[in-house]
Image 1: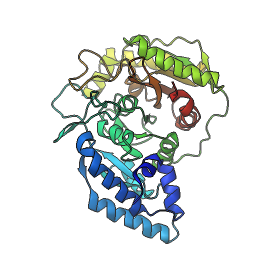
Image 2: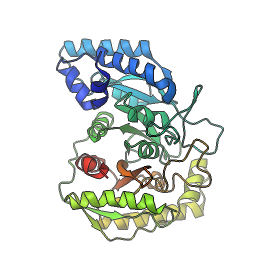
Image 3: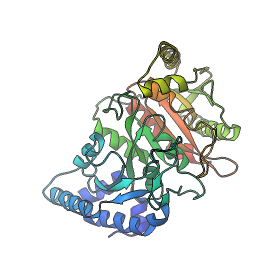
Length: 382
């Protein structure tokens, strides 16, 4: 097995490189992940089920393939799988085909509650690795916690209103929602798309290349970014907005983008999202969506990215968000279908994690992920 600190420092891409070059075996990596999870997840509660025997068997198969000359792009990478998906989902089958080894199912909320930003296990609620008093966010709660705690370098999620981006922001990691329709939707409404949570932006790019290979090159021109702390309707906490804005300006000062003064004023998507999710769209909801889409087209005629805080407020406790809308800044882009990603943007003056959400044009996923790789270390440093 590997030493804990070495394993936890490695990205998915780095693990695969070591396995493919015979410097470690997939079995050693997976044994390390399983042993680490057995010791640490009793308190964290990121996983609901561990598939130890199946994981060891899959790792052994990866080692045989590599010994036979195969070069698997994600050879031997232990991953968490969002509960409800299972290893047979579209994205997980592609990841397994690339050499990933699912080690267990990660927690999601119970079905009998009106708020979704937490995780539930038979041992109690999932804890946020940054502070056990905070919720990890949701609904991809366990995936975020497992990645942030270093149990796995990559975990799958799904995002119907922000369910990848919110827990990533609150756990201080990266969460990526592809363009809607690029991968098979997880719901009939087409709002819920597969997504990924990682600690390293290169791993998010490797994920996309694995599940939706594309040869479209990223934009090489300086990026123009429109900043909006509220999207025209959200009640964003000033400290959260200031933290995310400072992160964006660190990227601008490093020459990675130019911040454009372009107003963003959407209609609150709540009634349209709710109607579409329920399968009861009405003329009023359709008009709202159409107006927002038209405004977004006008914005993206002038800029390459939009940037917002990922959530309008910091992580709440395990008693729930109260009347606050965790999804206020994320679900507009499930309706519009734009690709969106959250990067860790530092902390508020109270030490609470804040995410910087970047939104790109439809199908500009590669450009978004390339920017994430360039921006990551600059944006996250407070």
